[in-house]
Length: 73
Image 1 (cartoon, rainbow, N blue to C red):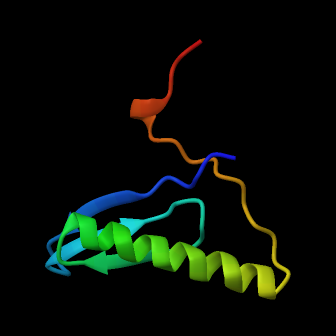
Image 2: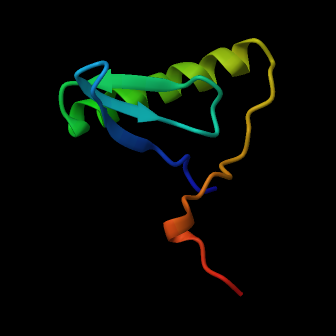
Image 3: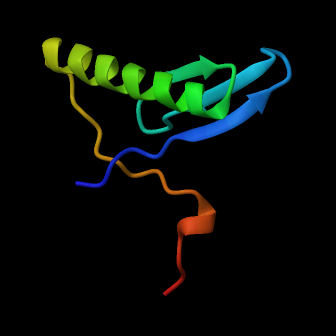
C-alpha cells in the first residue's frame, strides 16, 4: 500500500507551515518549520486512522497524487 501524500506549505495567516493530508478529511498539522509540520502531520495521521478504526469508519485508500507526479499514458 502506498502511503498518504502530505502537502506542506507556508501560511502567512498562521505565520508558520501547514502540512495537509488530502485523502484524510480535515487531517492537517502546524509547525514553525516544514520539518516540524511534517512530523506533526504524521502524528495527526496516526490519530486520525486510530479514531476512524475505533469508530468503525471506512479508511480511505491513498489516492491523491499531485499533477507533478502524474504521468500521461
